[in-house]
Length: 90
Image (tube, rainbow, N blue to C red; front, side, top):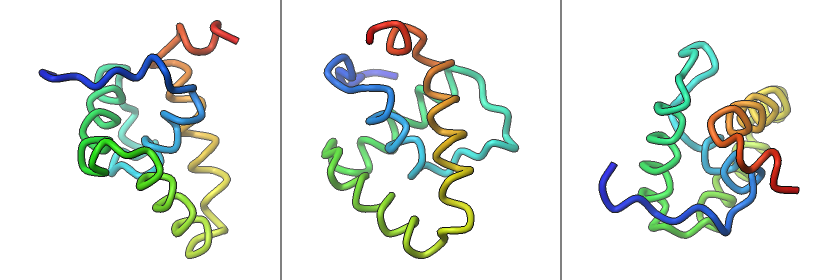
């Protein structure tokens, strides 16, 4: 991962929103590295604009409310595992 964006100013919830919009699935059982790569790639696809990713989350929540909660829960848990320093930074 070259040119890695600096995610230090983002919270676990911010990164979970970005992960939520990625193609990565819970059924993939992704490693921490796969999660970090997916977040990096998706953030780049959003023009490194977190609000663009948040807009996708809002759209998905409206379009698929029946799966939104489970996917966001997975995204939050997965980000906490991939970025343990964020879970303890509160």
